[in-house]
Image 1 (cartoon, rainbow, N blue to C red):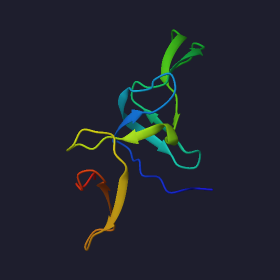
Image 2 (cartoon, rainbow, N blue to C red; image 1 turned 90 degrees about the vertical axis):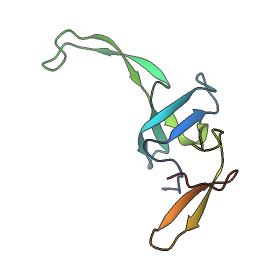
Image 3 (spheres, rainbow, N blue to C red; image 1 turned 90 degrees about the horizontal axis):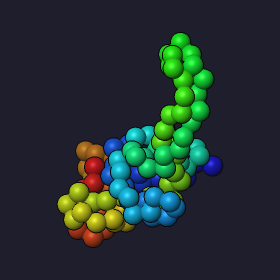
Image 4 (cartoon, rainbow, N blue to C red; image 1 turned 120 degrees about the vertical axis):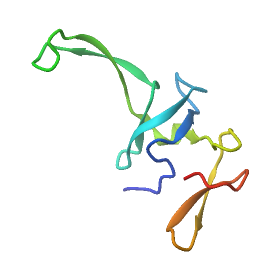
Length: 107
């Protein structure tokens, strides 16, 4: 089941729980079916790779792993705080995300 998600690519978010709690990063990609997102410099894991044509040396590589969307909260650009999001229907545009604290457009 795909649910409604308010987070999109290039949003600045803060991690609410886990080993990276309190850290801030930018969303690199979102996976709505699994309710996960890859965030820049968050949830780094070590991956052991064999030598191949693309990676001649192989070895241990650090990679960002997906984080559950429920553990992330968006940061408003105007008020610089973690906020909840409202939706507003505007003429000429479809649906716009709005900060609940300062009523500014997030998009």
